[in-house]
Length: 95
Image 1 (spheres, helix red, strand yellow):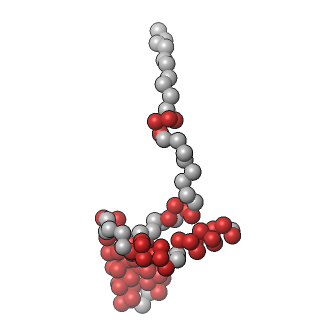
Image 2: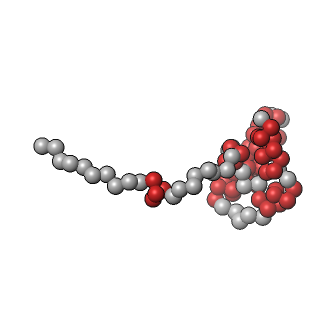
């Protein structure tokens, strides 16, 4: 639990958030920004606070280049390349 809190604090520092905002826009970011705006504005017009929270979630995912779990707070530990993992297998023909 403490490790997760440390990772979240590291992710959400001011410097890191500014770096994330300045990244180039991709289709996924534009999609999340658009969905967040649409859900948030339409929910705001109807007075649905749950929809406003959902819209804020999607908008922040697009704005800060976050994924659903943002790598789950754990860095990748894979040290071998996929080519090193594959082995040549010899097959014999069965008649």
